[in-house]
Image (cartoon, rainbow, N blue to C red; front, side, top):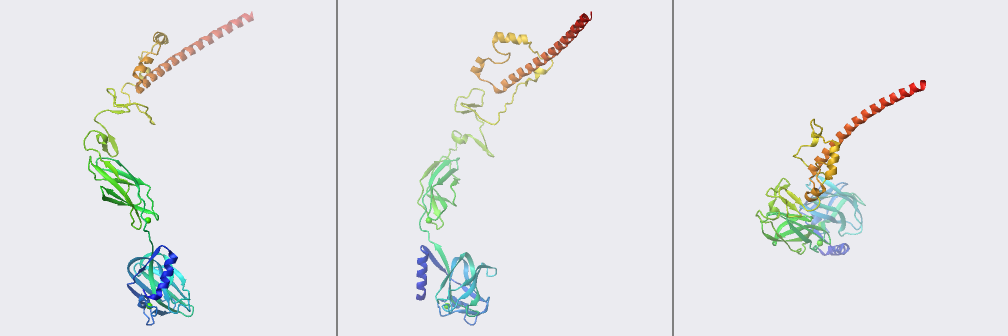
Length: 392
Ligand SMILES: [Ca+2]
Ligand SMILES: [Ca+2]
């Protein structure tokens, strides 16, 4: 870098603050035309050499050799302290297809030194200057160009996350973490198993470690990353012991298939380890569900309406209640207290009673109709008798 540029660079660094500038090397160049002042003069670090081309729309083009990031062009103009130059900037990934980045840019007209033109962030290979002449004539003449990448320096590492973990099976453990921060932004995490990197992740907060060995204790830590590859110190260590491979205890007694788990070895107690004989599931506490289906092995009481059903007379029912204090076939309070209610069986018995009640009601309905007929006939006879008496 020659002395004449020093003042420009110093001013620029102070104005940007913590940013740092990186000049991208130009590998080759080409132009639409020149007058003998060739385009390679624009990156020879000499303000006394230039590219010059006469005419609106003539262009100079530079190749960075590969895709590069940049967001600033610094250009010095021939006679740049006495006239302003107008131009557009295009970029291209392949040297054939061009994208307009800036149009109608105008130099200051006050300096022979490099002037800064900030452009939107680019990641591309070719840059083209399209000249539209200057304030005096249609010559396009530039003495130097620099392609600059301004990178925001992030040197501060993120903070460590708070890690927790749970065993999932004989071979997997689930890790989760939270609380990490960074001055610019957290971008990812490194997961370590017993001090060895197990995976590098994006900005997520959970991870399932796989491929573990049963009945083995592993120590996990996580570090936090930012975009500049700064890494935090390690998080707290979480020790996880995988399930045993045996058939006793833990989740290994359950068989798993397509998301269903099943247990076929014995019976299950929830909140109790006393499971009555002949029962599959014992729960000490309440059960809630949206629907409960009980599939009875016993006959559903449609038999009440069948011919030959021995419907007890109401007198017999009355006698049963008087003697025993409850309906026939219905368990006593004492029995319910001792043995509980069997939901399906009780519904069967209650329906049996309802159907019997229906039969009694139908029978009474017939008797009421018969009584009505009898009363009507008697009333007619009474009226006839009254009429005969009044005519005499
Ligand atoms: Ca030059
Ligand atoms: Ca940082």
